[in-house]
Length: 176
Image (cartoon, rainbow, N blue to C red; front, side):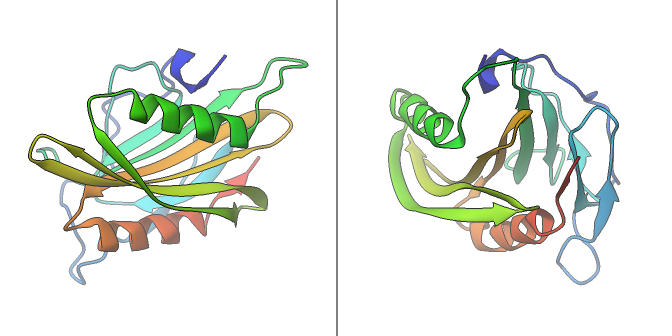
């Protein structure tokens, strides 16, 4: 079982609020909890839930209803008894999948990072396809029951601000 072979957990109609940004320009965060998720996290109150139809399990949110929007995905896989899934292996598999796409992939960084008490691997990428360039930040971690992949994707121009929001979110994660 991998992150690709999962069923969708949350409905696409999840709406956190109708506007894009708070009066101060930075999104306001509020605790998001759902009994189907093995974690709680603070998420931007003004973002929208989205169903990408890819079968991933977790929470996917976007900053607006029209593209290009900042996207954050908080995905997980439940490990089967005795199953050997690891963050390091999944991070490498994810990167291999990116490289096999039609995108030009450049890894910008790779480091160990701990959020919510779980040590994992965090990588940043530049992805170019046609005339489009996006940046992506992905954190992989695992515990006894789950493998996690928390992802941020945004345009190169907005990436810095979006990465700050993502960092604030990750600082609030609590695993169940």
